[in-house]
Image (cartoon, rainbow, N blue to C red):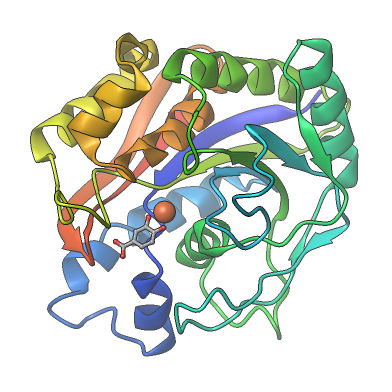
Length: 283
Ligand code: DHB
Ligand code: FE
């Protein structure tokens, strides 16, 4: 059976794509952010994942306000990126894993999650930026080193799924991966957050205290955040801070005991409290 090796959770701000394209990793503005990633990459080289299940939210590239699934899973041979208007390079397509995709879709529907299955799916910056941070390089020349399965959670158009529902989805994804007849090593990748609000009278809102507590609790007690309703999470983290739901899904998929390998928290990147965390599945 497949093995879940761990999870990485990270912010996905589009400006990071521009900084990578311009090689600004050592620029004073960017260095404290990019310095969070080499230890994660070093750990990934050790744990050697074959597949990444990427839990993220689409911001209008694949789904728009007219049709917005609560949960969607990709089941395509590959996933293309396209211009979203942020002025960042479009990245080469990501190879899929159709066998894991269909196993996930079947298992989740069996577990009573009403998944939208996408046999064609564009992936936006919330998917591509984390992949580029974890596996840098020219992937037009060198293929991406992992296959990917996108799991898209609606964190943008109300009503959103509750934190409790996202926690249960993560657990069901974990059970599905563990029952996948494969010798693949699977990484969970959860993207978004942490606190940020891009518009309205609270634009620029950041809550360091809540973010740090959330990161601490996510390691040992991920269900802690399910005590908050979605309106409470918006109040505490900003309208886009609710992207932390993707972190919760990815974390809740890990079985048994979890060890924190590394984390970094830096304020701000663009309007966002930018953070990364790597968690190893110990047993
Ligand atoms: C920003 C953050 C996001 O999560 C996003 O999807 C787009 C922009 C930002 O801070 O600029
Ligand atoms: Fe976002």
